[in-house]
Image 1: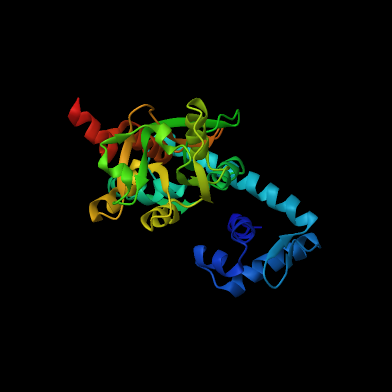
Image 2: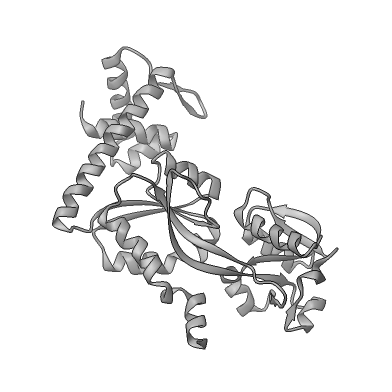
Length: 306
């Protein structure tokens, strides 16, 4: 059985699609189906239940899938070790990022990285934080970009930068007459909050608790883009990362204020699975985000002031 067949099987399972697995492996859907059928014939059991809308692994398929992942990971580690000897920066990086960083910050870094190392294939997916942690631990992704990283003995955390959190309001809101605002002014103020499972929500809630503030939460969302649209409509105010509102500030659809009595920011970091050998390409990408902080717009402004 060829290694490519094992990879195709894993791709079908992970993508939940024969057609998508065929696409990324440059095969026809018929060829992928034949490979899966060949595996099932060789072992004499069905590996995948082919329901109309989704695919599920049989107990035998689950065992085979885990074994395939271990084999493919061993081969990847071997390739990385060989590349280390020759100092080659190539291969594939499966990168996942939370939406705010992926949409507003990462594109500049990715563009610079790909222009410097064109031999690297970088696949970027936007995911919720909980999904990123799960994918890193299950080897579905190589690197994950998260905010307010959670400590975990199975993960390595590579700090990148800090991101300031600011209050956003409609342009004609009463707060915009001030240069800054005290967090106590948010007491009983209609407020759009992150959902409780969002790490940034924990930072904001801690600041509220420390100052004994209770805003009037009228809506909870997990999408900053939607939060910005709701605030623009005048429904309520919110607290979001400063870098996520550059376009709205320029267009005049939102106003932002800093807090005069508290400092709120969130740590941005890359996470990777502990014990997994990082490729040269992954190390270079981590270095770009860590050492290239001056490339980040928010940090560049701070450096000019100092």
